Length: 197
Image (cartoon, rainbow, N blue to C red):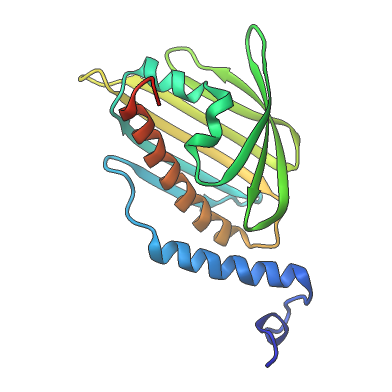
């Protein structure tokens, strides 16, 4: 039987095409098994005309702004907040910023991708992360935090990410939405568990 990547006109052969087909199948399975977003969470993910993916989310977090800020800036423990396999190899704290080096392993990309980021806390609550080196083409992530009437946190999240991959941006967008939903659920559970997480 001829493999699907050799039967579809215009698709390249070889390992790259096999990775792409495997990723498409993985995305289909992930979407079929994914539940809805966490309560009070709205996630919008779209492809960016210049390449990559943009995401915007609004969350209601059941903890104070200070508690959320503490979890978001606990850089060494970032891998605990994600389903995607990652490791933090550098946390360099400076007076006005923190530089982090993270290696991310994902099924859609062979090996690991290095993300060297500059992290700055925002006045009033929040965190901004910008790409300063590594294997990503573009990466910007921002958390804006504010207290609601009950002392909990209203959070707005923005992400722009572009990485070298054979997968089309619309498929990357589907996977990013699934991963963000899992990330926000883990964040909620971490906050609910309290400081001893």
